[in-house]
Length: 235
Image (cartoon, rainbow, N blue to C red; front, side):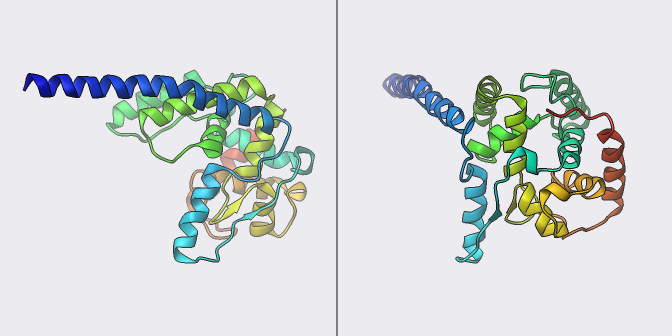
C-alpha cells in the first residue's frame, strides 16, 4: 500500500513539474500570437474552428460566413450597442470588471447555481481567439492570463475591432459584416441604431434567434440597450 502511495505521489509530482515547465512555453506562444494580431487580422479563431467542425458533422460542405472589415467600416451604432450591452466600463478597466464580478458571485450564491457572469469584452475575445468552451478552473485561469496579455499588447480600439470581427451572430455567422448582411441585408457600416441594438441583444445566444426575430424578451433588451447607447463610450 505504501509503495502504491509513493508511486502515485511521484507520478503526481512529475505531472505537476511537467505542467510548470510547459506553461511558460504555452504563454509565450499566446503572447507571440497576440503581438502579431495587434497589427494583422487573424484568419480564424479557435471558437470559429470548433463551430465549423461541429457544422461539418451534419454537413461536410458547411462553411462559415465571415468577412473582416476594419474598425472604420463598422457603424458607430454597433460599437456603442455592443459596449452598452456587454461591457459598459470597457474603456475604464484593464480587462476585468471587479465590481461586476463581485455582483455576479453574490447573485450566483443567492441562487445556488451559476445564473450570472461578468466577462468583459477583453475576456470574451481571449476565449474566442484561443480557448474551448468548458467551464473548468484551468480554462478560466488561461483566459485571465490571455486577457492580461491582450490588454498589455493592444489598445482598446484594436480589442474592440477584433471582438466585433469575430463575435458569433448566428449559426455559422461571424463578425459584424457577415451579421449585418445576413440579418439585415446591409454592410456593417450602414447599421442603424435599432439594427445594432438587435445584434447586441442576441450576443449571449446568437443561434437561438432567426433573422430579425422579435420576441418579448428581445424587445425589452433592445429598449434597454438603446437607452444605454446614448452614454456608451467607445474608443
